[in-house]
Length: 162
Image (cartoon, rainbow, N blue to C red):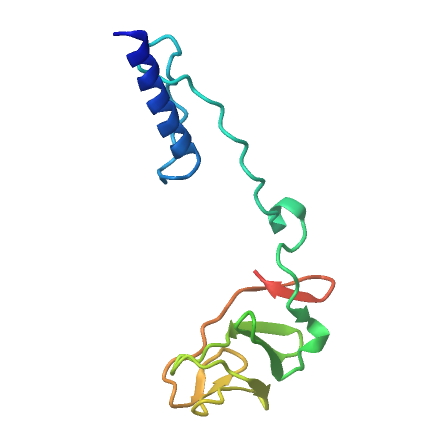
């Protein structure tokens, strides 16, 4: 094989490898197996991978909540709660010291609940009502309750999504 043909093939392979490394084609990761030997014909020397971006910190890594607190315990009234529209959740305190969290999306037609009062989480669209203790339907037309979400209540009084 001529030097020109060998060089042309190496160039094509190098460009293809660069395109793959640049994210033009997505594929599963390798197991870190065999690398091409630079002396073998028609092979591209292995290139070092770019360093990966650092992963976001998690509560396990930092010992602190990865997400910001939704609220403080003192801001959730006993027998009531508070709706967090951006996070689409509602946090309640059915009895002193017990905190619950549910989706704020009504299962009837997807409206967001808008208030918590008198032991009830209320949906403004069709007047469905849900219990602050367990998210169960107390008045339809909804036929399913609000799904429970996990929260963390920190010693400093902060409540955040788990």
